[in-house]
Each structure stands twice: as C-alpha cells, then as structure tokens.
Amino acid sequence: MVSRVIPVDPFDLVIFGGTGDLARRKILPGLFRRYCSGQMPAGSRVIGAARSEISVDEYRDMVREAIREFGKAKCDDSVLEEFLGLLGYVAVDARGESGWGELKAALRDDESIVRAFYFSVGPSLFGDLAEQLRSHGLTNPEVRIVVEKPFGHNLESARALNEELARHFTEAQIYRIDHYLGKETVQNLMAVRFGNMLFEPLWNAQYVDHIQITVAETVGVAGRGSYYDKSGAMRDMVQNHLMQLLCLIAMEPPARFEPDSVRDEKLKVIRALDPVDPDSIVRGQYTSDGEVNSYREDVENAASKTESFVAMKCYISNWRWANTPFYLRTGKRLSAQASEIAVVFKDAPHSIFGMDAGRHRNMLSIRLQPNEGMTLGVTIKEPGPGGMRLVDVPLDMSFADALGPDAEDAPDAYERLIMDVIRGNQTLFMRGDEVEAAWAWTDPLIEGWERRGDHPKPYDAGSTGPDDAAFLINKDGRRWRGIKT
Image: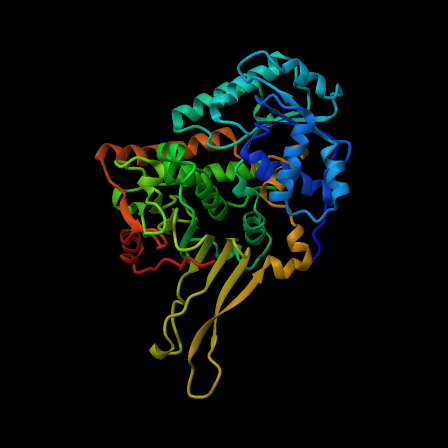
C-alpha cells in the first residue's frame, strides 16, 4: 500500500505563539515534514509571531533546533535550509499596537492566496487576536483562523468565545482543532463503518453488547499543574477528545462525506446523550508509588479535589443505540499509554456446541495509539482431536504492516489538520454548536460533584485506575479491556 501525497496551493501561515512549546514540538516540525514530502509548495510562507524581540535569523535558528529535536522527516540539511528560507518572524503585541503594520507588510498582497492564522496561544487572547486581524486589515477573502483547545471552560465561556469570534469571522472561516481527529486510525472509523457492508448492518443495539473507549496516559500533570488543577480529566479529555471518538463511533451515516453533513450527525449524537447518574461516574486521583509524585504534589495543592481519572457509563437515546452502554475511561499515570475503541458484539443467540465450548463473542478493537491498527476477534475450532473446543483468534491489521516503509512517512495529526485548513476542509474540525452541545452535556456532571463535595478516589500510579472503576463495569457482568501498549 502506498501513501499518496496531494500538494496544496501556496499559502501564507502566521503562527501566533510561534516561539511556544506547541509550535516547536508539533506545528513547525510538522510543516517541515509536509515540505519534505512535496505537499507544502516552495512558494508558501510561514511567519512566526510572538512578543519576543528576536530577529528572523534567531527565529530560524530556534526552528532548526526544534526540527532536529522533534522532527522525523528524512531530509538532508539542504532541504532543511530551503524550508527555513520560507520562514519569517514579527514581534507582535496581541493587545497593543506594536508589530501589526510589520506583520501586514510581511504578507503577500494577493487576495487569491490562502491566509491562515494559527492561534497557538491561550484562549484569553483569541478575541483580541481576531479583533486585531480585522482592525489592521490583515484578512482577505481566503482567510482562515485556527484555534486550539481548551475552547471555553464551560458552556457560558464557550458560548461567549463563539460570539466573540463570530463578530469578526464567519463559521466557515473558523477551524477549532482537536488533534485526535487528525489521527489516521480515527478517520478510519468512518472508512470501516461506512465503506464496508460487513459492519454497518451490525452497528446497532441489536448486535452490539457494549462499546468501550479508553484513553490512558502514563504521564502525570507535572508542568501543567496550574492549568490542569482548574480543568481535570473531564474538561481536559472527556468533553473534547473522548466526546469526538464517541460521536464518530455512534453517529448515523452522513448523506455525503462533506464537512457539515458529518458534523450534523456528530451533533445529533451529543444531543441524544442521556444525563449520567452520579453512581455511573467514577473519578480518581493518582497517588505516589514512591518513584513519582502524587497528583497533589504535582499541582502543589494538598487539598485538591480535581480528578486525574474519569470512568463513566452513558447511553444514547436513539433507535440505533437504545439501551446499549458506552463505557468511557481516561486517566493520567496509568499502567500504559494506550488509546482504544472496543466494539463488543453480543453472544450468538444459541450455541450448538454445548457448555464445554464456552461463551464466545466477536470484538472489533480499534487501536488509536500506539501500534495503530485494528483487530477483529473471531471464534474458530481449537486444532486437534477430542471434540469441538472453541477459541478466539485475532484477525489483525496494523498500519505499520499495511503501509510498510511508507508508515513512518504518514502525516501525524497536526500535519494532516494544517493541510486541511489550507484546503478549506472543515470535516475534522469542531463546529461552534457542536462545542456548545458538548459543554451543555458536561457542565451538569461537573456541577453535580462540585455541589455534593465529592472527592476523587485515590489510585496507585502505574495501575489501571481506582477499584471503583472496575466495579462500575463489573456490576453489569462485563470487564474493562486490559490497558496494553
């Protein structure tokens, strides 16, 4: 299998926060990989913008080091120097007047060229930057803005932020980025569901017993403590990443593969989510194992009630999924880093093989990271004489095996999403009403445990989470999938 590269037209991209951690780790190395692959044309420009008073040469030196540290492109130094030649830098004050004239002068005066502005800054600056771009005449008919999460802290703040951006840009010009949607395997959810006659007829409550969505991390929150302790796992992961995975796995087939058709169906899923009972939610907080700090030590708050782990059972009230439980789980300092969606099908309605054959059911496991791929569990006869004994075996597909040497060159999430911005394709970006609907479902859950004064359950660093999370699913006669790399 060969990964095809389709070049985009030349563009101008301004990265606000161009000296920041996200720009250094993801955005700029990702752009270099797209340049090496031939997808980003040499006629493009990338301009870093931040408050730091540094020269263009100093900025290029910083980017060179970032690419060498974080980049994975197989290009020689001459290609790197070509890419660095496309870079510019302007010192800009987001809330003041300095630098905006210089930034305007650095952009090409061509209304046909895509002009994208990446807001790689805190949400408090989104409105200021949007207003400055309009007031200083930096937009053109092909303008796009890219905004990072967190998009609001609750429904009220998300709605206010949407209204603020809408004063300066149309919905078609706003790209709310969630890097999870850029993962190859996440997009394959739609291909598997809607491109195979095998699965879609079975993708409903009649045949599916339950669905598990797990996003486990081995890292703690050190370095992000001040932010994370105000957010927690529910706001940081469930409201956006896990919600998007839930939508893609549960949505109805869109009329066509177009941005608003896809996002309309995702929105219907969120609006069909039932409220979650308090006894169907487990919150946890990691403790020290003697080698790493506890959560409270990492956030320097000995009385913190913020969760670093969430597990819940939820239901979608529609014909397709009535009474089918969806189990969601995410946490920090768990036993392994793994993201997986497991679609567990029901048992055969009648076994002709007797009790000795045991219970067997099919399961489709979709691995988002690491070792991206899919495994379909099927039941076969165990080899050998002595009666009919059944065993489960995997039909396994990994992208590394399917793509061969091209697997390493497949674009990562940020690369793909930035190229989609340039193309004007919003399929993998969240719409404003979708964000607000997610907060409208999430807010009552958070307000509930804050009102009750609930404390998160402690769990050991390096474990699979608090014991209560296991009980949440065990009491239904089910088991969590193991967290494996």
